[in-house]
Length: 231
Image (cartoon, rainbow, N blue to C red; front, side, top):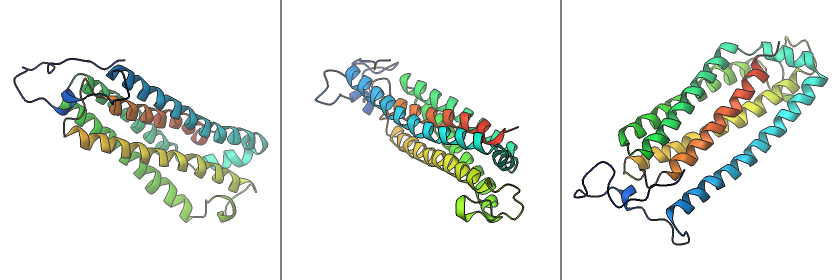
């Protein structure tokens, strides 16, 4: 999708003061705004490919360890509450939709809906992280369900359960960190949106931040069944 290049404000008379997005000019090293937008989007896709490689390593480790010690993984999975994992899945799916609507609102110069959708996305991010930290991490850690040498849960029935918790905390912890990074990017976009920075001629930051957020959602779609739905 290419940026719209027009000298007139979208849907309004040319007599009013132009918003910042209408005055936007591409960097001096770009031939035009379309080239700048395409390069920004392509760069984000390249970055996301490295993120996929990161999680691919985790998934490979998961697959090998689960094949070698299936009972430990089954035991560990039964300690997880599928209701909280399912709720977090719904929360991220909603946020993925609202961030897509935010991009569309920027393209159509719907400033109000751009901000509304960004705010809803951020609320979902806060809800996800709160559920993960307050209702899963802290309760499990407090009873000894910890990774590796820190494990001291007294009712464990398999000696390899500490390895399960190592994979659980590594996978979900790195994912939670991505949630925080994505929320930070979207917060920055939201703050700048109140200044009229984003619109039909300048929405690259909205779209690239949205792509990053979609990756956060996609990774969780894989983590949820692998961790919560074992047998």
